[in-house]
Image 1 (cartoon, helix red, strand yellow):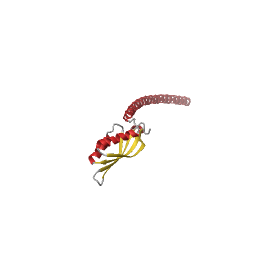
Image 2 (cartoon, helix red, strand yellow):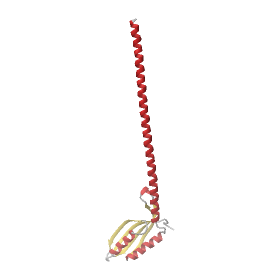
Image 3 (tube, rainbow, N blue to C red):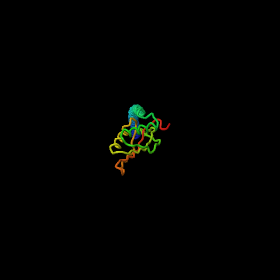
Image 4 (cartoon, helix red, strand yellow):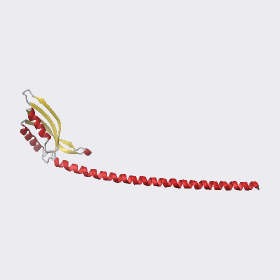
Length: 178
């Protein structure tokens, strides 16, 4: 009898032990699942904040880029290549140097941000005269009332004491050839 009682107590103890372990396991898994849900909600909230911030940044960038594009368009000449050449020749007359246009080609003018470009006129210009005159002509080209860029300048002294300059530049123009 004593053995039967011990055996029953032993089995009953094992049942209680397994029930307690099962209950502890269930509590632990519930807590872990809640932590996972809380963590998932935090990640979801932070990603929503990041998406909203990214959207605001994109909208701001689009507005800035659009404004800059409009500013560039205002600086772009509306005239064709002949009008640009006439402006350059007039600048040479104002500077007191003889100016000749070596070549005129269609080019592009990089706008900087975003890799955008504008149509442009690429020019090769020869100027000859006194150093002060050639240098003044170059400064007039730098201050053209249009979006322009001087790519290359080369000065050399000629045999008769004059200075000769080779200037390569680009001028943004909406109508490159007409």
